Length: 217
Image (cartoon, rainbow, N blue to C red; front, top):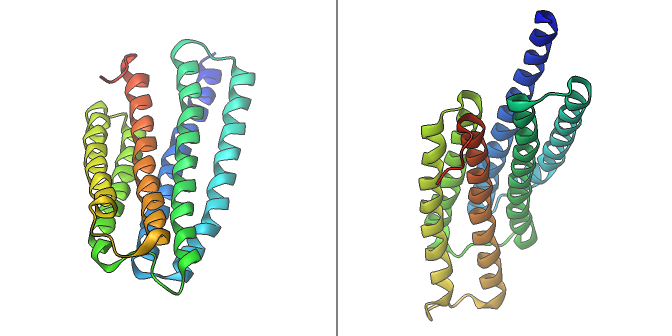
């Protein structure tokens, strides 16, 4: 029984490490997507778009592995909760990769022209930095199950929400001079960054629940 438990624990540890690896992949993706957007770099945007398929494949394989573990090991209590939570976290992380992909596609669509007006570059760069920091933080949260850090992600999301409001305000304040098409781009880009952070919060909340058995308030 001890040997069986040891093998099962290795499988659980492998799932956790895969989630860490996936979170690092989406962190790299949002970093590149932001740089491509700000600098109108088509090559980097294409790298992000191509990498999304790798992220999707990684997530699908991870989910299949988790389902296989559940079928074979028939876990109960905290072990079952950990595996079900892992399935939900992988879905959030995959969606974060999709959102980076969407940002890169806006860059590609407008190339060779920049998708961003020059006066918004610093603001969007800040949003990208916040998004990358959040995703790097959740990698640590998943690996260490640090509940205090999990709660900090909520505060980071508050910062993203603030920046998102500023971005939308730049379109609606009556001084916008860049046309409807550009306003639509900015609206979508703001939404992508805001949703990216929301999915990261979802991951951190799931880790908090996994460790404490309680939902973060």
